[in-house]
Image 1 (spheres, rainbow, N blue to C red):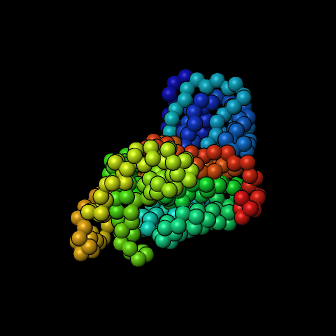
Image 2 (tube, helix red, strand yellow):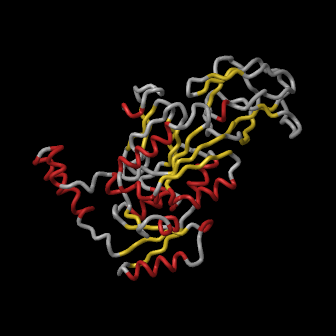
Image 3 (tube, rainbow, N blue to C red):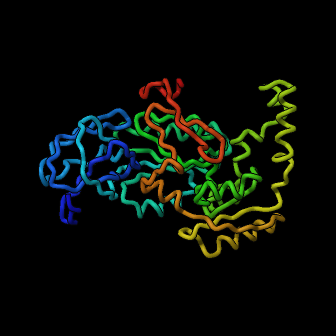
Length: 348
């Protein structure tokens, strides 16, 4: 079979061994071959039937709301496969911290998808249960079938997002310990700057203009449990184990002085000319060393564009719960929940 011309129909059929991001069909087949009916199995256990495809006809519909799917069962042998990226428009809901409002609104305006936005206040981070409850309430208030996915503009954030449940709509969250990772654009950059300084104060334009404080302490130490007292460890692990834990953790983390400098993260797309100057003035007035770091908007942009590669984002299917892993690679995972989607969240 000769290579097809650009005028030939490109068939959006997914190879049985290939999994693609949620917003794309990644395989197309070009040929004048007559295809039988093709059935696709959606990973969420919902099913979609394509109409019978003959000759140069076009597939009747895109994959079910762009969700991950794979071909199965019909034993069709393809002689020639060509790869391309075919965008599928989705309807998405974003729930995010208000410190990311400028960056999220910027990316929303440029996204192919239809996106609705909801924000929580910056100060909600100060109370883990408050943040978790606020976000869960917004998830639960989302109507079934209203959106293809709910995007969470947070990291683990001091465990404030740990325990969030996906009801009937998948959740997508960046693999990040802290919102700071979203400003930096990479968890590798976050590890480089914060692995040795779990309480390093940082800020951005969003932090400066919202709430009472102009900086935010990284929640990495809280997320990893390094903010706990000796008495806390005794209560959970006993006195002997508590001593070992404190002796292990203190030299590396708890005795470090993180109060001498503050980091300002500036993203080019939302930078303001005098913002870093104003931050420097406030930091120096408080006797702090000012450090400016260039951020990147890529993690936020890809989140809103539906480019959810498994390395940078976690997909939480319906009926699953977000669980913290606390390493530098996976960071979080989705675990199955025994609760049904229609249970009253207040009873869980």
